Length: 244
Image 1: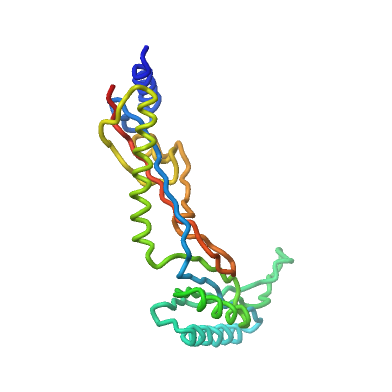
Image 2: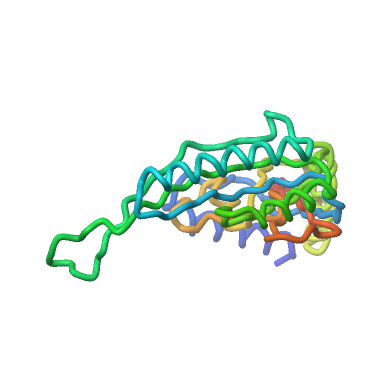
C-alpha cells in the first residue's frame, strides 16, 4: 500500500468515526492543518476597570460617599486629558448586608454596600501611570485592573492572519509531500482557538469538545505596571483537498 493509499484509508476511518456525531465530513481526500503567527508589540492604549465602593450602616451615607467619589473620578480623568467618550460609568448598585450568624432568627441589617463601576480608555502609557497612581491613592477605589493593547490592532491582526495562512499552507505542503501527495485547493478555513473545536465547525458535534478562549488575541492584562511588550497572536485552521 502506497503512502497516499494509507492516507485515503485513514481518511475513510476518520469519516466513519465521526459520521454519527453530526454532519458528514468531506467525501474526498483531505488534510487539516493549523497555521499560527504571533508578534511582540509595544502597547500604547490601556483599558482600566475598577469600582468605587462604600459600606456603611446608613444607606444614605453610603450612597452619598459613592456619588461624591464618582464625581471625583470623572474630574480626575478629565484632568489627565481623557474625553467624555473615554469615560464610562455604570449605574450605582446597592446591596443590603445582614447578620447571618443567627440563620434561624431575624437577620438584622448591619449595613449597605454601594458600588459603582468605571471603565477608562487611556491613550499613552505615561498618562496611564500617572492616572493609575492617583486612582490607587483615592479613597473607596477597589479592584483596579488594566488591560493593555495597541491602537492599530486591526492593521496588525490583518497582517497576522496573512502570516498564519502562509504558515498553514507551508505545513500542509510538508505533510502532503511526506505522503507522496500534493495540495490541490482550500476547502474550508476558520479562525478558532484549537484543533478540536475546529473539527466541530466542520462536522463534529460541538458537545464533544469544550470551547477555549484566546486570551492572547485580546491583549495581555496586568494589575498595575505597564509591560514593555505584549504578544498578539492569530491561529487559523484549514482543510486542504489533496491529490495523489
